[in-house]
Length: 453
Image 1 (tube, rainbow, N blue to C red):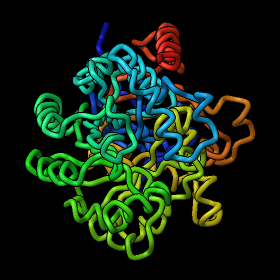
Image 2 (cartoon, one colour; image 1 turned 180 degrees about the vertical axis):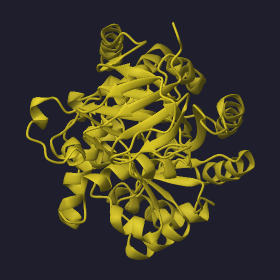
Image 3 (spheres, rainbow, N blue to C red; image 1 turned 30 degrees about the vertical axis):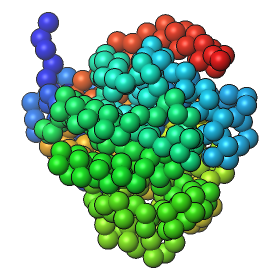
């Protein structure tokens, strides 16, 4: 059988390119790249080997997640953690998470990534920072678990070094010594971080938060990230409790503390970024900081609303994220875009927050947060990462604007997903992963974890 190298995705019902380019009549892909945009009334100039009729499809760039905790899929809606704000919620769940093992982490990594992909995500991201005994090689476990998924992955080597005995939130069982953290950080970057265009796997360094690591580790991580030329990630300004903690422990607000540790630069992206004042937002923009906006998690924990437009106006790179599945309870990126639209309209009004705006956060915005100019938009020369949503469904019947419908009518699953020019999801099913078998295994591990002493 002849191998197909050139594909025309023809006449989509709607297309969001994340730029102002015209691709009304479709996209031409060759191998792993987009080679042509077919404008309104035009035909491809390239030689076409295969045509896919997309008249019932809305097409977007593959969605890009910028913050998650895969292991938390094992603790969705745990009764004792329900209806609590962040700090009490964390202290409750740390007592569960301290019993995490390698098989659990592997299954959780696969399940969270599969869930993301089935919602249109081509690039997954995880912030893993729980390292109980037996999970010292957590990043290696995740790399192996992702091997059959076919997605791009940005994995962060998280860390916690400040346990309860030293005034931190996590139990001592899940923290590590700082020399161990730094040595392993350097090891996993050397082993897995890809720097070439079209990279499938990248690594960042990610102390969990100001209340779970020491100042020394924050500073040493910044030095190491500069030496290794990789990004840095942490939680910051998620709640008012965090502000109070930083003032009490360090005598300064979270952003001042971050700057004192050498983190206020373009290598850094922050999860949440809610509780910044006007001066801090200006400083963040001047430093070209990235922000992972997590609307569902912020609403569920009642943390607050991220000032996305103010951050963007100041010069920040802002992307979208689902956050962990214990504070969101699902890993659905297209649904998260809808949540952002609804939440941000409460802050900024209907005219300023549009379907295109939140899709920008989920695509080109997220790509900029992760320093990935090769993905996140539909343009010639970009990687062929594409999400195709079927509009032939009850929820879309009567649609006038296909792209607005994806968000406002509540798309929640992708029909086709292409990553690096390869179809990974077709007809809503992953080509290589048995979802039911994975879910059965995952449920068993979740039950074991939640009932462990």
